[in-house]
Amino acid sequence: MTTPATSPTYLVPPGQPPAGGAPADLTSLAPLPPLTGRRIRAAVIGAGAIGRGSHLPALALLAEEGETEVVAAVDIDADAVKAFCAESGIPHGYTNLEQMLREQRPDLVTICTPPTLHREQTVAALRAGAWVWCEKPPVPTLADFDAIEAEEGLGGGPYASIVFQHRFGSAATHVRRLLAEGALGRPLVVHCQTTWYRDTAYYAVPWRGRWETEGGGPAMGHGIHQMDLLLDLLGPWSEVRGMAGRLVHDVETEDVSTALVRFANGALATVVNSVLSPDEVSRIRIDCERATVELTHLYGHSNANWTITPAPGVPEAEVAAWRDFGADVPSSHLAQLRELVASMRAGERPRSSGADGRTSLELITALYKSAFTDTTVRAGDIGPGDPYYAALHGGAPGWAPATEDGPESATEEASA
Image 1 (cartoon, rainbow, N blue to C red):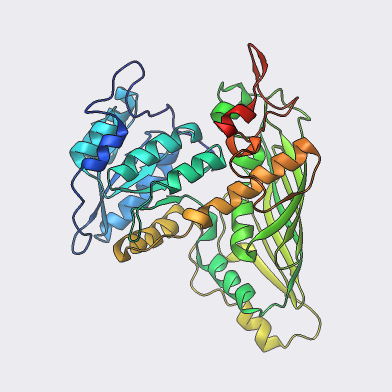
Image 2 (cartoon, rainbow, N blue to C red; image 1 turned 135 degrees about the vertical axis):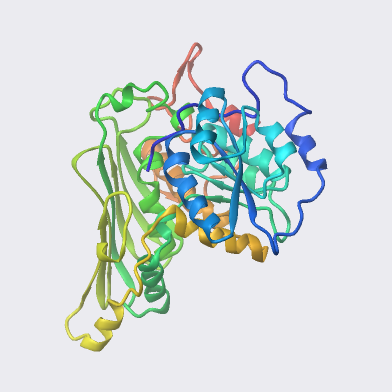
């Protein structure tokens, strides 16, 4: 889903000095106690729709199992966080993130705010010793992501994981195993589609369609889920050739993009991300040597959304085993959070963190660079010093946001 928090949540309200020092001072806090034999203390940052509709229900179900308890919530809007806490039975509400981290010492912070705030909030939580579960898009740039990874613990955490819930659930797990074991043969031809519809009223919200506040267009804000799932199923990509356009909406970002992607295993993929498509669908199709596996859904999937079509001559017993997805566990925040909590208790890096969480952002960055420079971009090409490392628009003429001095230059940011 792409619904943001109703209002931004900063470390402190704008115009006020930090309470108790800069975020770096949080590293002086005493280590949190071991997680064995007790509930994981969680705090929710952002009292908007995604926190209320997805994070809190998942945390509540795990609380019923004795795994978690929500001890605090933070939002810059005092009335919003007060109502959020009252509705959900959360004991402590704050408008100051740093104060909450000092006073409540949560083990887990879930971040439900716009992407431009994710880096600051994630770093603060990590420095306070808390693990982080952050909504997608993870952060606006690879530079931001690498800065967060540099703050993670060295062995045993804390780590910062991105909400990529489409990876999780029974069907995705089953198909990933079939592909990894080679049961379906080599992946050959791939299609990844996020074709949704957003009208002009959607983009009337001031922060939407802008690089600074939304982070990107449909490739970043909408299609990232399907692209992340595709990468999780097929493994690393090797090169991309992209195109992007503003065909309908008056925005800074694109409203449609297409890409050709070559994977390290040789498979060739087409990727389409759109907010111009009245017949909305999310789809992944992978044609392998021995079968086609296809997922068709919109905002979430269960076993019933997946089909496997065998090539001629495949034994019926083998096909039946392929089609046995097991007990139906839909993709969901709950499915991912359950695995994250297990990783926390084991002191292990969770999925969709570190290099594993970076891969879809790197592909999206490469897609934009390819589209805006009319070149093929290869995995690993974009690093410090590259304008696209510091801004997804890369300072490209016609795409970079205008400033008083003309188009913004990302080159200076990248080399700073």
